[in-house]
Length: 378
Image (cartoon, rainbow, N blue to C red; front, side):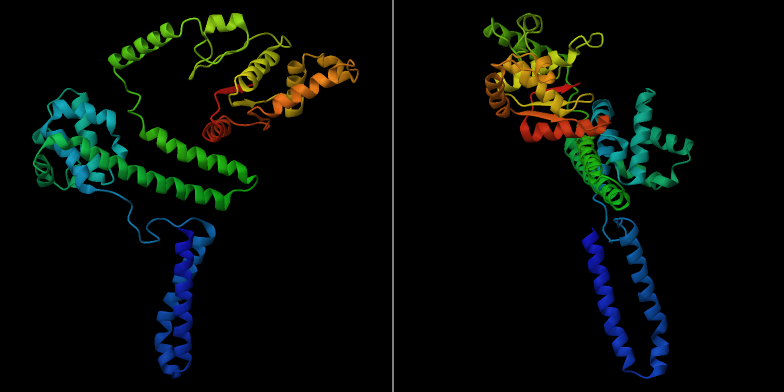
């Protein structure tokens, strides 16, 4: 969008320069008559400069209409009026009122949902009554607009198709809005640019999360079938750890390994070895099972963590290493451990005062790039 504004600015400047040169070759009276036109062009150039310099251009400023499909929106409402008992409940699950671009269509959709929530019949008469009660009849185009909707589509069975069109256009508008906001933030942001990058990435990912709200809405039948399939898998692989092994036999026996989606909390009093246990598990997953592991260290530096990992892997006394009095056979063990750790995919982030949003964005990036299987927060 910035390129479009700059291109328009250059075009205006070019035309203005040519126009001014032509005026200089003419007589003074003709120049005087053209002064208002030149002033209008100069004013427009100044406005564009101010827009480009202070903020990102809006869709209206670059003369582009936001993506929408008014007919598809009408199709959704028409299908709801034709078959309310079958479609209204499905519409609530699949479509938010903000997905409608035309304000009148959003109003009608919300009123239909309200009628359904109140247990009232849904038809053109009850809808018109609700519109008049809320003084919204004129805002939707009058009674004729409501009556037009009932026969706008020949068959309500195409409802899902209309919904997908409306959702797609809404997604495109959300992307445009979010990216415009990101451009504004980039113009006004002061400080570390990496923070704005995390914010941009998170905002884009949030769009996808909001659009997938109905994908996790599974029936009990779906959950039962999934549970049965999991039980069958455990039976076929009985005697083996199903998830990621921790390296501690008793823990693995109780947990049957660590599984996707689980959150495991290591709780104990201070200085009881919580970090050491977590690092031993991370080391086992990363080195012995050759899986990518991410570690967010909020207390210790990367240097301290790696030193602990080396000592643990080499089976040497960490206190003696820190005191500078290692045993004679420690260095060969440390070198061997260093070679094994250096080949592992262990990603350590020690960003101070990291926020939840930044951690989430970085974790997603690590999952996408390195396919991390375990995330440790210390």
